Amino acid sequence: MRFPTACPHCTREIQAEFTDSHIHDLTCPHCGGRSCVFVRKQKFELLFDLGTRALMDGYAREAVASFAAALERFFEFYVKAHALEGAAARGGDFGAAQATLDRTWRHVASQSERQLGMMTLAYFLREGREPDFMDGKSLGSDFRNRVIHRGYLPTHAEVEAYAARVFALIDRLLTELGPSAAHAELLQELTFAAHLETLPDDVTAVFEEHPGMFRARRFGGEGPVSAPRTPGEKKALGPAPSLNDGQKFQQALRERGQLLRAFKGEKTLP
Image (cartoon, rainbow, N blue to C red; front, side, top):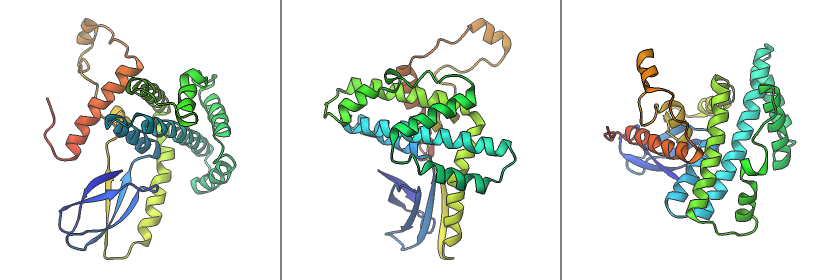
C-alpha cells in the first residue's frame, strides 16, 4: 500500500510504500534529497485501512484477511496498553515494563488462541467483567475461517457486514480504553526516537499523521448531526438514535473521507 508524501527539500510529491515499522527512509527521485518519514499510525489501523481499500476496489476475499489481522493486532494493542497502564499506576519504570512485556509477548506471538486468552484476561482485569465479545459470532470467526482456510468466496455484502462487526468492536474497545491507549502508542514513539538518533545529518526527519478509520472516529466529529450546544437544545432534540454496526462503519467511512481531503489539502464538503 502506497501513500503520497512531499519531499522536504524540493516539495514535490513522491510515493512511499508503508513499511511494517512505519519508518520510511526515502530518497527523492526528483532532487535526490534524503528524508525519513515517520507515520504515526498503529498497525491495526493500517491493516483495517488496507481491508477497506481492498473492499472498495472489489477484492472482497483479500479484504477479509486484512480485517481479521487488524482485529488480532488490536487485541495485542489492548493487552499492551493494559499492561503498561498497570505498570504506570504502580510507579514502575516504563523501559523495564516494556522489556518485560516484550519477553512475555514472545511466548504467544505465533499463537492466535493464546493471544485471545491474554485479551480475555486483560479485559477482565481492567473492566472487572467477562468480555461479551469473545464468542465466535461476535468475532465473526466462522466466516473468517471459511474465507481464509476453506477458500470460500464471499460476496461484497458479506464482507462489508464482517468489516462493520470488526470496526464496531475495535471502536468500542478504543473508547473504553480512552486516554490509556496512549501507553501503547508511546511504544511507537520510542521506536521512532531510537531510529531518529541514528539518522545522518543530511537526512531530514518528517513526522506525518495519516487519517485512518479509527482516527476519524476518535478525532473526526460528531457525525451527520451536530451535537446540541445548550442543555435546552439537547432536551428538545431528545436522545440520539443508536447506530448499528453497519451504520457506524458507514459513518466512519464518511468521516475518513473528510479527513483525507483535509490531509491532502483539498476542500472539504459542507
